[in-house]
Image (cartoon, rainbow, N blue to C red; front, side):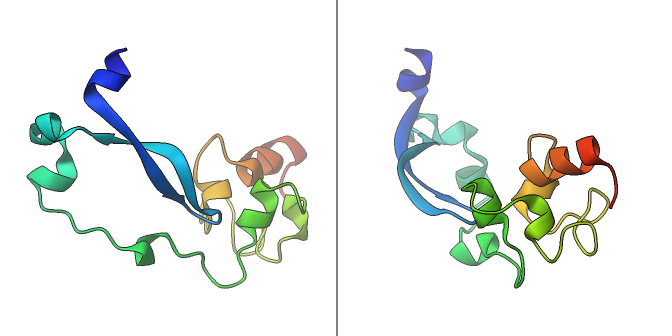
Length: 104
């Protein structure tokens, strides 16, 4: 109930996956005073979420390839220099693969 009172469910653009309907939250207008995008006039552009050329994170997320099948994995993309969303956070598939399998 609390989430429904404060947020609207909206389409969301996910890096590597594109737009997924009803997968994001956005502050309701009455809570714009808490919304950093509104408060600081932060522009939004889909360019911010473009994959770098050669990054195959979308295929990893979809289970089509293993992280080691991405040409960037461990060579260019690693926890010290994450390229795609799969390596950026502790929840990322590539990040976990890196930590469990060790450096390659």
